[in-house]
Structure formats: C-alpha cells, structure tokens
View 1 (spheres, rainbow, N blue to C red):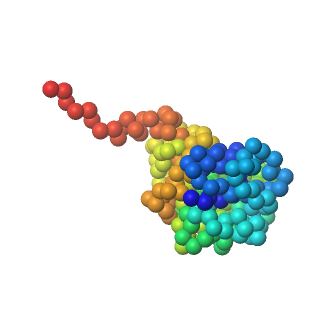
View 2: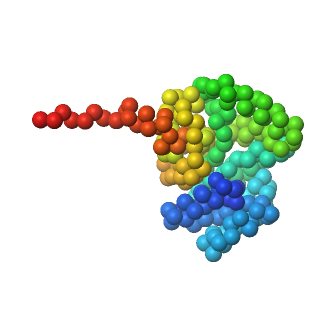
View 3: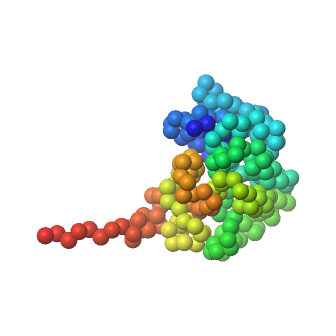
Length: 226
C-alpha cells in the first residue's frame, strides 16, 4: 500500500512512519520544511514532501497515487491549521482512499461521550489560555472533524493501542493513558480495518489498568475440569 503520512516529523508521525515501513507500505511523508531534519536516517526509504500541511498544493502532490492517508490534526496557532489540513486531504485524496485522522478526546461525534470534570476543566481553561497565547485553538480540531464527519470519504477519526470504544466515559477507557506508539499502531492498522470506516474510536493503551480489567471481564470462562 502507498501511504501518505501528514505531520510525519512529530513524535506520533515518526512512529507511524516506522510502523508503516515495518508493515511493508511505501511511505510519502509530509512535514514543514524546518522539520525535515527530524526524518534524518529515513530519507532512503521514504519520499519527503516538505511544506505546510494546510497547503492544498503540498497535500495534492503528496496524496497523489496514495491508497491511504494518515493525518495528525494539529491545532497549531489560531488560523485554522487543523481545519485547513483536513480540508486539503478531503479535497485531494484519491477517490476511495482510506483516510485516518488523529485528534484529542475532546472531539465528540454524537454527543454521547461522558467527560470527567478534570478533562472538561483542562479543555476549557487550557484551551482558553492556549488561544489567548495564540499557541493553539482546540476549536480548530472541532471544526476539522465536523468536516470529516460530514464527508463521504472512507474516514476514521482516532481519538486518543489496540483497544477502543465508541464513547469517552466507557469503563474500558477509565485509565486515560495512551502511549504514542500505541496510538500510532492503532492508526496504521486502521488503514486495513474496514470495520473502522466512519467510526471515531476513543482509545487507551492496551496494558493500562482499565484495559486489563475489561479484558478479564469479557474473557470466556475456563472449561470445567473433569
């Protein structure tokens, strides 16, 4: 599979690049020009397209001929960076391409998520401070995912392992711990999992306490000994 990874130079992006290569995919990596050096050592194995990820021309070149696109939606600044990135991918990805986007737990698709007061406070207070500092705009991710949910592409939005649930607040997610490598692994595997098309899974690391408790609860009973 030819896979474009948008936001490839970040920590999550670099994990996805390596995991995609490990699975035998051909990788096209998109990152800002000033971040290309972070992909040093992989130049011989990937194609790098430098440029802003919300630039339609950059994305158009990068996703051409790609069967799948992995996108790190970063709400950088206050000028709609995540929304511009998502829209560029939606507009220019090949018809039928598998699109997998990442974002935080604060995104909800159907309003059925149940957030703790700590998470609500973090999003409210931290989001306002980040916007005042013109560092980030969490509302930008909300708008980006709204457009994704409304599209007729083969999308998945990963909010957050190998373990997932449809809604934040489900007991399996109680630990609220997700390693970047788990997040990356889930996204790369989602490329080939049609059950996740038009899903917005919230994930947690598979070895976290709540995940292990869930696994024990749903494990089939051992057969009675004779």
